Image 1: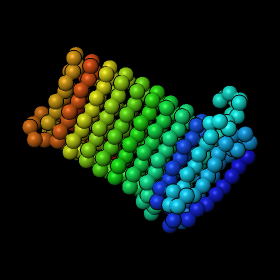
Image 2: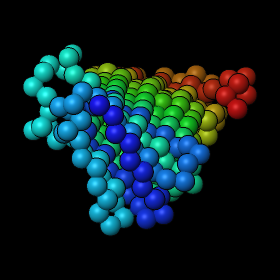
Image 3: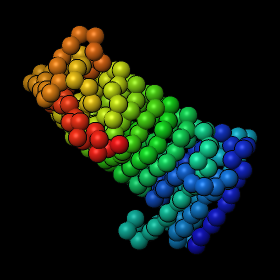
Image 4: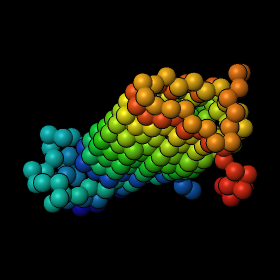
Length: 252
C-alpha cells in the first residue's frame, strides 16, 4: 500500500514526526512543496495519520493500531521531501525505526529515538538536539550554533562539525567527534565510555574530572582562555588531537 501527500511550504513553519517502527528519510530537495510519501503493509499504513493544524504539519504512527505481526514480518517506510529554502522547525520521535536526515537548513532540529539508528548528514540548524537510547548516532557535515547530544548505550560518531557550543552525554559506549571549525565551548559527560575530539586548532582550555580516566593530547596545547573543553567521566579517557592540515584539505 502506498500514499503520497503534498502541502504548501508557505503555510507550514513546523514539522512534527512521531513514528513507532517505521524507517524515516527526511531530506531537502528541489521542490516547492512539503511532500510525504509512505509505503508499507496495509495494517501499518492504516496506523499512519497526517494532518495540518495551523502552521504545524504532524505525521503520526499510532502504536495502538499497529499490526499484531512481529517486526520481522512488518514494514513501513516514510519519505519526506522539503524545499531547500524551507527554514522551519523539525521534531522527530521514533521508537525502533532508523532515521536519516540530510540536506536541511532549518532553525531547529530535534531527533529522539529509543533504539533506532540515527544518521545525519549535510545539514545546518541553529539548534540541533539528538537523543538516542540504545541506538547509534552517526553523521557528517553538520553546522549551527548549539548542539546537544545524548546516548545511553549507543555509539556516537560525528565528523566535520561546526558549532559554537556543544554538549554531550554518554553512559557506556563513548563518543568520537571531529570538527571542521573550532568551537567556543564543549561540555561532555560519560560514565564508562571515553570521549575523543579531533580539532583544527592547536590550543584548547581543557579540564577532565574523572575517577580513573586520563586527559590525553596529540598536537594540542592546554592554554587558559583558549576554546573551552570541560568533561566529566567515571573511567573514560578524554583524548584531544589536532587534525592534520592534510586531512582538513581533504575534507574541504
